[in-house]
Length: 169
Image (cartoon, helix red, strand yellow):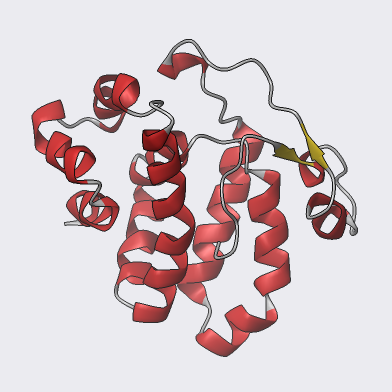
């Protein structure tokens, strides 16, 4: 997930599911769809969740060298889910028992943890900078089954690694 910043544009890879998707996706960008009015309107389809599953299980089950070989493949998958809001991305992981377990393993490895956070952290910060995070904290907390008070401090301090560690502890 490294080198996949969340931008306000959808990558072409989302629209052109072909072997050239990664290459095209890095060049051509589409304007965003209408912004979501509520957390419930944020998009994370079953297909998106399957790609998130593939990314996390690949990260968890492969070593550093293997991940370097699969970097292009993982970047392509990441480009295809670039439209997924980072809180929906995170909720799809922490509400899935197997993915939550994978996340524990990923966080146990410095290399993998940094790669994961290099993708998620900047995306959360960017959404916070745009003012598109605070409004979603309450429904996000409800979706992941924790009281808002338990996670608010992470949002206030922008401690995204602490937020993820909270969910895997």
